[in-house]
Image (cartoon, rainbow, N blue to C red):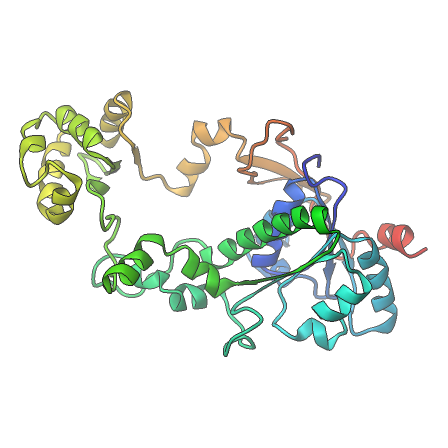
Amino acid sequence: MDGPLKNLLVVDLTRVLVGPYCTMILSDLGARVIKVEAPEIGDDSRKFGPFVEDYSAYFMSLNRGKESIALNLKNSDDKKIFDKILSKADILVENFKPGTLKKWGYGWEEVNKKFPKLIYASASGFGQTGPLKELPAYDMVVQGMGGLMSVTGQPNSEPTRVGTSIGDITAGLFTAIGINAALYDRQKTGKGMYIDVSMLDCQIAILENAIARYLSKNEIPKPMGSRHPSIAPFEAFKTKDSYIIIAAGNDKLFEKLCNILEVPEMFADEKFNSNSSRAKNMDELKSVLENKLSVKSTNEWVSQMEKDKIPCGPIFNIKEAVENPQVEARNMIVKAYHKVIGDFKLAGNPIKMSTYDDPDKRGNIPDLDEHREKIIKEFVN
């Protein structure tokens, strides 16, 4: 694909989600990605469901536009091939347990001596330092240890995982950000650098309001359902037929809401006339609003509130979200090609750039070791 990272070569030593998500972003931005997989086994996620004609939809959704070669980095002949590829690469991304690549002769120090311009990014559960560095981690482990699950769910509910693998995805995003910053730095210095991203660190980094409340007030936040801890009204409210999200984040928006609901006196009430007072009286506020919202359907209220530019919306299931005309207009469902399945639909790239097209067709989905002959011919022979 064309993009700002065109002509950059990424060697992708990653598997499952955090690393492949990062390298998918780089690929969508124009980089060439060569995915180095374990012989016979490949990326673990090739065996994760759901499956389409025995091929993993999970794997396909993360590895479009990449080339695949199977190499055993413990094998001397395969290491020679890998070295040839690395010699032409700009970026190496890996998400092995810390110390694994060093055992195989590909730690940062060894690689940096051979290829001083190479940017080397490691994404792991707990990072390359600290007492937990050698422990493995999956998404839900860091969601739990990072505090995220402690503020997710309904009050007094059992621990609740966020409904997507945000532990992996945020680490993939931060790794991609770090790589792009390192590319800019290399333009100035001519040198590569090492990037160390921890999934647990990333969970701490995104705690925003929760961590601010603890560090400033020594208050330990708890789950509040859909409610925001310090802005009101800012949650899901029952309507005649379902729920509506209303996020009236300032007094002007709340006044508009009161007028639409035909309760202008609420805005004059000292219990509701400022955000701070509304935040202290959330339960009563919700009761009054839901009483008014109960007379119309969610769609009716959304239509009415949108006219006054009040932030609001329905709660869609995945089918409704994917088929939303706004999502379609933004080209957020695209196609990639697999030689057996044919066209396969997947999520698009949310980064839209004025200089580059945002095509609705992405690169092909690779089978394990599919590009061996091509890569050997280009880099070795």
